[in-house]
Amino acid sequence: MGRTTPSPLNHLPDYAEADLEPSYTVGEAPLPLPPSEPARRYDVSFEESRIDPDVQKVIRRLTRHGHEAYLVGGCVRDLLLDRSPKDFDVATSARPEEVRELFRNSRIIGRRFRLVHVLFQGGKVIEVATFRRNPKDDGDESAELLIRSDNVFGVASEDAMRRDFTMNALFYDIEARQILDWVGGMADVERRVVHTIGDPETRFREDPVRILRALKFAGRLGFGITPDVYDAIVFCREALALAARPRLSEEILRLLRGGQARRTIYLCWETGVLDVLLPELSSLLYDEEREDGPGVRQWRLLEYIDRRSAEVGGLDDTVLWTLLLLEPLKEACDGARDRGSAVADFLEPLIERLALSRRYADGIRRIIGVMPRLSAGRAGRFARTELFQAAVEVAYADLTARGESTATLERFRSSAPMSPTPHHHRERPQPSRRGRR
Image 1 (spheres, helix red, strand yellow):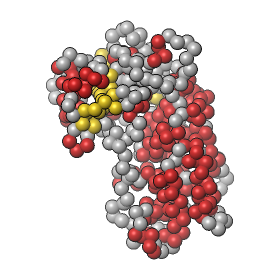
Image 2 (cartoon, rainbow, N blue to C red):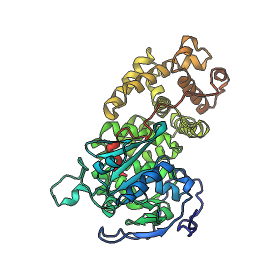
Image 3 (cartoon, rainbow, N blue to C red):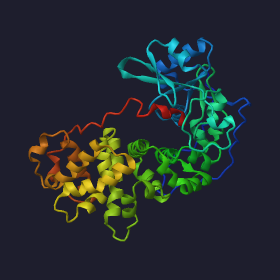
Image 4 (spheres, one colour):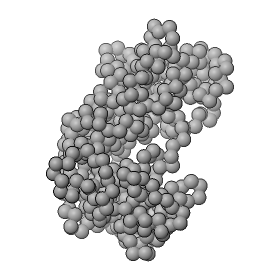
């Protein structure tokens, strides 16, 4: 379509399935440019069919009215990697009120991070964010690192510099068919590495959830982690206790949904992040004495999540939480008269530490309670409940991880497994965090 100028990533090496060990990549990448400098521009021609037509309409209307507007963030990264973006984000020089005036089918949302949702048929939401700059750049040397307010508007270069990782700070100009790069992100995508913009320790202390995002991208994309970022993850992991608990809970689910749950959870465990978030699981994984012990079975359960996600396009969130905690949960129930009470006691610290919702906790408790009967082929009245297929999925995974026959469950297993828990179209429960990319 149009120009066919070769992309700088045309010679990107094929990705071979990574080992569980993290890859350390050392190499030189361009230093970030000062915000006053023009961006490095790369001619890259994406097929128009790969970019949502409604997103193109939004960008073109903004530019027709004299505003800058670009595709930005993860969608640009995924297009470069020949992956299908989950969603498309737009960044613009227009203020939220100006965007709202241009699109009658829109609404301004958020207080901490105001942006605009442009609404289309079928429930499609396109998020349009105004260029921001880091509020710390206003000169207050005494300010704490943790960012609590993020509504300081800026220009495109400042917006790029305030994002978390270089690969997520690339802007795509759909009219010029060019990538704009102020941070060396193109080189890092070529090298397939996760690297922060600026000092990694500072960026992680500004927003500790970035630690989980770094591990998520490394696991999901098969990227390496640069040594300075890896060391900062280890050094700053305790700062996760300062993050908003619902964000931690949601980010853990994203680690499991990405199709690389085993690799990502391994990275969390190896860096000590799992010790902070889920010590109940982490301590169990350290026990590698038995060849077929609970630690080994737990890795098999994570492999099962990845395999089933590839087969059915994602598992229910209650199933994901149950499988992530299944071996520690079984140990908690070992010898208990009342399995339900044992599970409730086990989950109470997680509800406090991660704001695990009571809905998930209740589902986990009921699934663990019925598993012995299901594994024995007895469903009874539970077969008529909304959790039946979720419980069958967990019981099937448990037998698979133990290397036992699943024949007793085959007649219960629906050809169409329980649908994943509905998420917001964007996957983000808190749109106010959009600027963190």
